[in-house]
Image 1 (tube, rainbow, N blue to C red):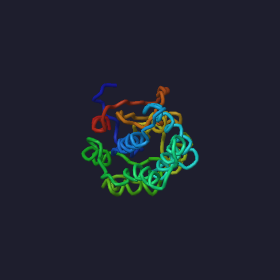
Image 2 (tube, rainbow, N blue to C red):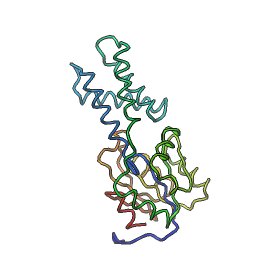
Image 3 (spheres, rainbow, N blue to C red):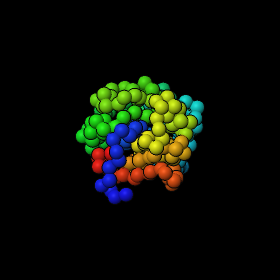
Image 4 (cartoon, rainbow, N blue to C red):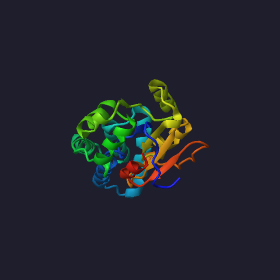
Length: 237
């Protein structure tokens, strides 16, 4: 199939939000950099502190899910674990401030989204499918100005094969005409393929490390597209 080939009208496109439609992880990375600088650990290097923080975040996600509150908990937990001195009220508030800084940024759409998403909505059925804290994700969608392009919104706790099967049953979707589009191999590509859907992987240079995973190959009858930008979707769909 040539790069210029466009799939027929009437597909169902499940679209991820964070780092697919708008920037997200770069703000967490800035907060983490500020946190590590403030910690200024004299035994562990910055890279070693980051590894420990990743482990803490992984545990937090299992226990509390995603979102700013969980991220705040992870920073505080990591600081308490690594701090050589008492965690004073002042230090605690400083750590919390790093986490809360990510809530104040404007929604920054990824290049091509504002132009291409309306075109996709005119030819296909769009469903937002993004995991995380429902209140936070809904707020970002409203502030993005993109909500009217979607026929439905789904915010599962995790995006695994069961979540994709559930969405397909709920909306009576045909797997052969349904695509998951996102930047995460772990949440967008692999589980969608395992659920029998097609997938589109859009590369992002700052995808969260906990979303990294080797991509599985598409099975017979499935499509897996790898694109470098959201704008390329307009040439394929």
